[in-house]
Length: 360
Image 1 (cartoon, one colour):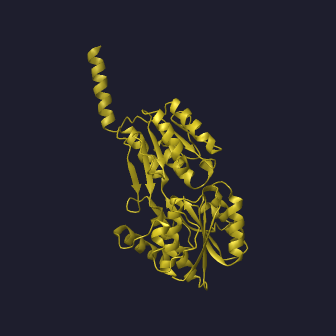
Image 2 (tube, rainbow, N blue to C red):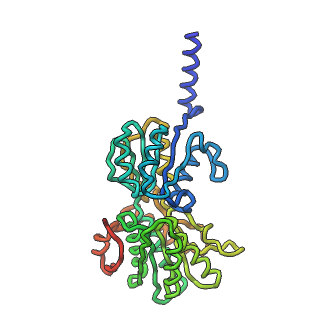
Image 3 (cartoon, rainbow, N blue to C red):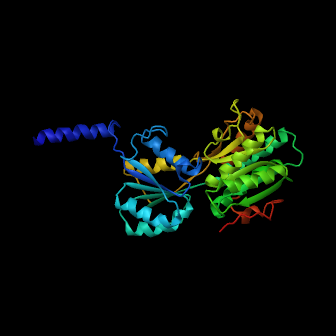
């Protein structure tokens, strides 16, 4: 019997080594009130989880068995949700966004054997927390270039550009700084306006602001505001359906499909800044599965394919994407430097000093 068990163990070990048996860790995703239906940030994190387990959005077969998601309707629920998931002993608990940082730091100390991963934070610094950040300013630079090049191609006179943020802070500032620098690299005297909704889940605020801006001559609006930003897309859809030449720019995920406004599958989303949060969740899960999990800070930059831009919309013509692609390679090579903070951006010649961005 002992020899039989030994033989079984050897065969099983060989199969694992050959990749034929893969132990899948259990995990839970914790999100803010916008949930996985925000069509951007949380949705991207969820896609990475689904992909890791071999499931799809339409058919999450292993949900409730190996993985699940829990949405906190208010920030008061962050600590209770973290503690609940920790008590249930998921092998990896994933939280999305810097608003979770304080709650995670508190709970991680109480559960030193629990593994956690947080996206968009590098300051928690606990021995059981993996932290993943992105160079959002690099990806945003490319969509700024795209918007400006499209305005020039459309022969827009004195084009204006808008940025809508969620809650002010250093992460969202990176989005805005990159976007503005990208625009100014093409049109040095372009006018840029910004607005912060102070909320991640109120699309009506972005929609009202977008309407006001489009009516005043703003050509393209980039939103980095979670579910709030969906209001920008909604307004752009309405106006493009009426024949008005305005654009929305998506964020985190490719939001082309969310911008479709007619039977021809034409979209009001010119491009989207791709922040590949799905890569972060997959990497963390793979590290847990492979016994390689570390409390490290992982930076997913453009060179690591952590950020980029979407080319789904045919309105972004090849001559434009060719120019953007050259610039993308220059960013990777270090030939183009993109300031990440407002303090550094304001040192650049002609950069606006009246924006509402905050480095704190």
